[in-house]
Amino acid sequence: MDELRSLLRRYLLGAWRKRWFAIAVCWMICVAGWVFVSTIPNQYEASARLYVDSDSVLTPLLNGLALDDTPTNQLDILQRTLLSRPNLEKLISKTDLELSIAGPADLEKLVANLSTGIRISPQTRNLFTISYRNATPKLAYDVVQSILSIFVESKVGANRADMENARVFLQQQISQYERQLREAEARRAEFRTKYIDLLPSDAGVSRLDGARAEVRALEGQLKDVLTKRDMMRREMSTMPAELTMDSDTRPVILPGSFGAAAAENTQLIQAEAQLAMLRLRYTEQHPDVVSARNQVAALKAAAAAAPAQQSPAAMAAQQLAALPKPPARTMPNPVYEQMRMQLFEQETVIASLQRQIADGTQERDRLEEIAHNVPGLQAEYANLNRDYDVLHQNYTELLSRRESMRISAAADSDAEKIKMQIVDPPQVPQIPVAPKRAVLLSAVLMAGIGGGLGLAILMLQFDRSFHSIEDLRDIGLPVVGGISMLGITVPMRRRVFSAASFAMAVLLLWAVYGGLIYRLLQTPGAA
Image 1 (cartoon, rainbow, N blue to C red):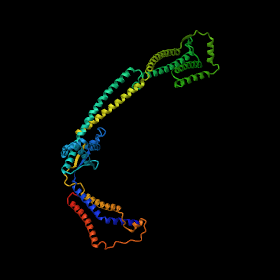
Image 2: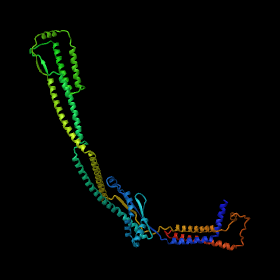
Image 3: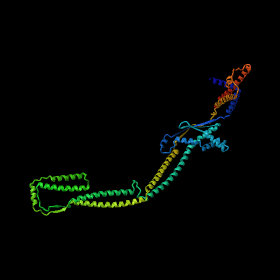
């Protein structure tokens, strides 16, 4: 702490000794700075506020139908393109800025200054401000007014120009895709006509696949018919072709039991014939076959369970059997004849199926030979279809875009989608907004004070004299003590006059600063 106090005391004493150099430098800096600040020209700012909003009914109505030209997108595009070089050159030609151009270098410099000087700052989503500063109030107003005019023209003209360029481009692309689509359709049709037998149809099945499937189906039908024919042959081999009947025409009245047995025998024969016919048509598990089979079994069981005792009817039957039998007569078995007709029909069906299988096999072999000679047929056809699908999809998309553009153009020309309103029109500024002279004057004063103190401290660094006993002791020499300067060496009047002169110089500097600030406050807009 003592070292810091000693160091501070040393710097203060050294600055006091160099006070006249410090105050001189401070005065020079302040005078030069204040003169420079007074020569800075005033800057006047003209500004305008613009409100842009969309149609709350038309914009949602066209959502998804027209092109995406929402107000946010349009404002973003306008803000980015408004300060383009063509617009700035148009701005220069509409204002008096053109008078300051003496050559291409001046034009480039002016365009660069305008691009940085004109500010477009959004305040809300729909409200933003356009401002520009210039030393001439009328010129600042003209620049802002011209920017507004260019903004409105850009909104209408740019949209129409973009729409026209887009329409021409889309029409060119649609025509090109139409030509490519026709060529792809012609190649596809020619390829399909050449290999119609091997290419799949609209259902996804080719004639070769159809021929293979047809041959397999016919072979399966043939197997079924052959199986049915063999079953019929086996049934016919166990069935008599003719039935033998008694030729005696005399009426024979038999007792009830003998007539019943004959009736049961006849029913058994008819049931077996019916079972054989049903087996030709159905499987063993069919309900009709099962029922007929159960009926035959029941009749056979009833015949086997007949009583064995000799009844009067049985004795009469034995006596009748002992008599000489008349010659028997035969007649065709109707069941056998019916099965033979069905067997003939099956043979006809077999012959027809064999012929169809032979024709189908020949056609299948022909198509397989063609397919074997063209191994990459399916891949080539898939490539043709893929190219055609891509072209067709792009063509459809372009047509949709063209319709969207047409609706957007109609909305821009026939309806006002964007509402634009100038909230605050530009005015000729009367009060300058720059420079902030009070701030600049205060900064110059602080710079002068800092410069004076800095000079004093810098001179102290080059001063090799000793200012205190501690300075002597720092060099390693033994110091017994110190003698202060006697007051009689410098007269009191001289010391007072020196201090008063320095104080007057400082007060005069502050007085000049205060006068300048007061003068600025009396001038509207100068501060």
